[in-house]
Picture 1 (tube, rainbow, N blue to C red):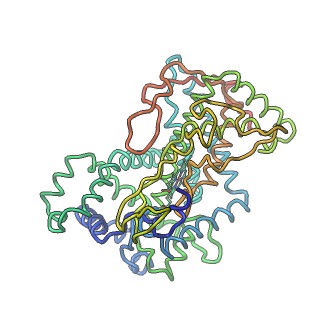
Picture 2: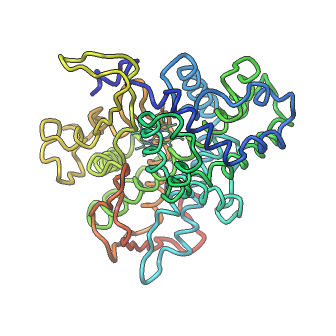
Picture 3: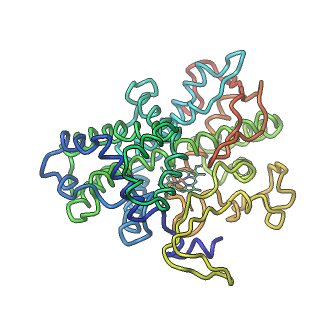
Length: 444
Ligand code: HEM
């Protein structure tokens, strides 16, 4: 899979003319264009550049523009890490998670913590993308979560519609009747969320423009706005869809990763206690928790990600006939690579279905990473948020164990039937019992 996904020809998402036309039709039907035009100045580079040529960085061909947008992302990360900004945002999000769990987590009937973890991840994303740190109760923040829910509710059907657009004649694709039939499916949730979520991003763009300093980008959106001055591919739709893509990529993935970990820890109280003690000891060495002082914790975190990956790859599209190891991948075919299969293969991991907490500890007691745990995918189109997610996961998880004892009241490790995510079933109920007095979080 690594060899295939390292090839440019296999590292594309949807790029056909018809798939683009389907998007444009949907935007026209929603009267979408008036939103950016009513909020942004007529001379704004995003308006001058028009719609753009793809639905954001997570879409389209693997070309120079895509590569550039990934480089911009990584440069922004480095800059914010250099200024300690990322650490600040992640820590404040972790504290907010704890405050919510302090309030709700000890409920005698237990809670499903996914929304709380998702809030934490969304807040890191909004900090990275816009420099905004939300209070989780902020109505604007709640709205973002609703838009994300709308996208996910219709995403599978929307992808199917795009696939069909490559098959049906263009006159069918564009007919009102055909599109009305699709509106009877969950596609409508997706289509309704698009103008709402984009509208929110355009409002932010309008505000951020007022204080933009081209020589000093403050966040990821700033870098896009500055690049749009000279890069015509940053149209208003492409820019907003890129920002939304990172909210979508970051939210359910991290929330479910944290939820699987909470379930594992609840079911293995001995492991939970050992992690707690390791963190306590590491904290006594240095108030800033150092990863190198937490080998067992890191091994548990990695093992939980290996055992319960939250997703396989997104669809890769083949742009030219490509031969790998004697197999031909024909042009325009669509490929889904199973990361789960790699991580559950006995050739790669002994007893792969078993939770082995110290699987990644060597004979000297040191943590050893294993690249075969590849939940962020491999190759040219791998997860752009990998390093951010790994950092978030470590801080969220250690803050959680430091402050709460986790118990499971209901549910099990069964997987919900879901088209592209591997998520726990809906009936889980966990209890988070505070280890400290209320309002006395240990990270403070
Ligand atoms: C535990 C957390 C996460 C997991 C397991 C995960 C996993 C993945 C996977 C499997 C892909 C598809 C790769 C492929 O098709 O080959 C992907 C793509 C992507 N992820 Fe993540 N992700 C996580 C967190 C994040 C975060 C925090 C962000 C952003 C802040 C993010 C943004 C994206 C984007 C934008 C893409 C599309 C990249 C492209 O098409 O070039 N993800 N992720």
